[in-house]
Amino acid sequence: FACLAPVYISISMQNVALASAIATSLSEAFFEDSVAEVEVDEFCSLSEAETSKIELLNSALEQVGDIDDLNHNRSDHPNDISAHDGNPSKQTKQMLKLRATLPSATITLINDFQGMDLALFKLTTTHCVFGGEVDFPVLSDSESPLFGCNVNTSVLAEYFDSTTFKWEKFLVKPWEVTLNCSRSEQSRFPSDRLLTTFDIESHQCHVSFSEHFLVSVGAASRMWSVYSGATRQATELVASTTKDDSNKQRLSRSMAAHAARSLITTLPYALENHSGLNASYSIGEEHLQLPSNSTRFFQFDLFPESGSGGMRNYGQDVKKPRAVTVFVGDTEICIADIDREVGNRHAYFILEYA
Image (cartoon, rainbow, N blue to C red; front, side, top):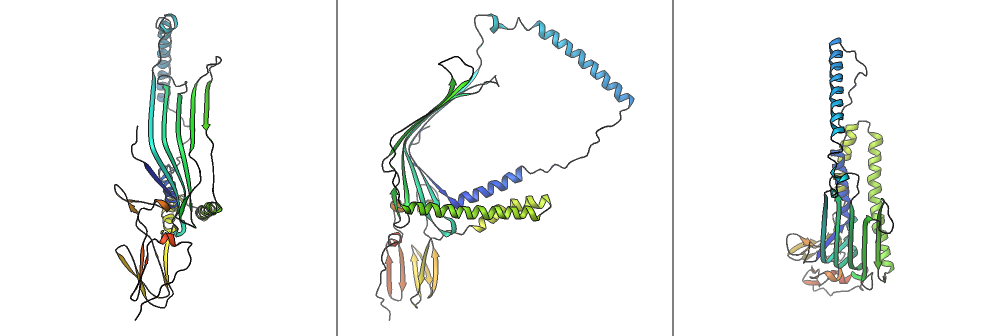
């Protein structure tokens, strides 16, 4: 297996929460115990005809068993070719081999709880080469499969600084890692026990981060704790107040829907109008009103890529700046890149209003 194009994976905390709720609902729907218990009498009297039929069947089965034992004893030694001949029989084995090469793979973790849309961490692996094989017997259930694999890659990591809206290096230099693991027979001394080994070869790892990274990770952790705690308390409340098992299963299956409604739509940007004048703003081709003493939340469309849908880009990965135009009377205020305005000093504009 060889991949020629880079691979990009974005993991959203909202999507993880929804997937967890849906998985819980599906598992309870498929594995619910719907079998009713049926009471069966432990002892019941048999008639004389039934008793005689059972005795006849028992005697017939004993005769068949004696004949099978006799035939087995006769054919045991002549057919054992591997025990006496010079050519021992080889057990049929099945081997699975896998080779994979990835030029680049990037995983981005995004915090989009409570209306936010901030990247947390980005992990990139370059020149990843994987090779492995599994050798397991087909006819023998007692033997354990043997395997061996090796991975060689170079790792890059960056964290997102929410104060500057830029990616900062978490790993100052590429971190080269080689992993070898195997499970095979011991070669140093004879033994029936298999030997499992793990060998990790790591170069020097240079790490650098600021307190803003710790603050972002702590905020995301607290948001996840609040969500998981609220879900757990709701489940315990349903279990304590509902006595009917069918209602418990129905309410637990609806947890996914409640979780979906509890997650706020991601609207990370906002405009506030405190000028005392009615205004409007445009994002791309969309033109919206901004009355006085009001706040409007909005978001930008995903960046188009090859194929369907779009892609979430942050910091230096943004190819097209997020531009917003505000109209107040006859004055047009253009914000070329709203992300770059974060952390800057206050700016003022002279209105041309008749």
